Amino acid sequence: MYILPAIDLMDHCCVRLKQGDANQKTIYSDNPVAQAQTFRDAGAEWLHVVDLDGAFHGQPKHADVIAQIIQHCGLKVEVGGGLRSDEALLPLMEAGVTRAIIGTRALEDTTILKRWVEQYGSRIAVGIDARGGFVQTRGWVETSTVRATDLAKRVADCGVQTIIYTDTATDGMLAGTNLSAMAEMADAVPQVNIIASGGVSLPEHVKALVALQRPNIAGAIVGKALYEGITSLPEMIAATNKEESL
Image 1 (tube, rainbow, N blue to C red):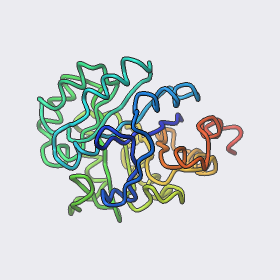
Image 2 (cartoon, rainbow, N blue to C red; image 1 turned 180 degrees about the vertical axis):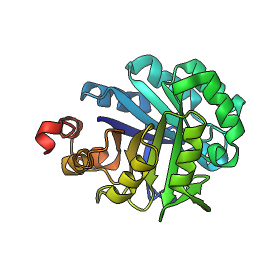
Image 3 (cartoon, helix red, strand yellow; image 1 turned 90 degrees about the horizontal axis):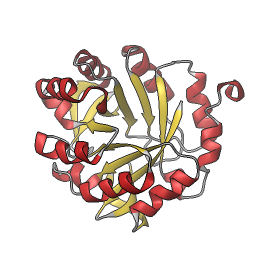
């Protein structure tokens, strides 16, 4: 398992939202590139970036910032937020993102998702955000009637190899992730790598994910806890050691 520190972009700043609510925003940095470099220097190999303006408005707003992060930091970068068309996806692919995370579009149209997978292969991931087991879309402002595990099976059939799964009720709450939901998702699509998101804020939370013993839970995203100084990136990375986690 690997740890992905998170950078959420809004108005070209690094922010965190409480449970995805734009009205509950905390600004942590006005220099996303410097923040990414800080994570790199602390041991990160991956970076999880969300264009929140893109998620809310349906069109990426920070492609320039993301390109600078990739150029200057040397990290593997996965990006989500507003990737709902070829025009939105292409600039990020050309900028060199390791994975582009498709959200709302995957729920609405698996035809285009399948085409993107055929075109870009493992560089296409799907973000599934759920509350109470049901998929949320459009920046978490709409809840669908589709079960998260059913959508996971659908996108797996399209050839998607990675799913970023967020339990939105735990996001930003620092209380740990929804372990039962993560286990259920991992079991639903054992052939797909699952990245856990939402509430992962202490080394104990990482160890609990490891203890689920689902080999396809491949990573965990950490955000607010790093910005608030509740934990450090080296501590979270150390917690992925399976021997120490038992």
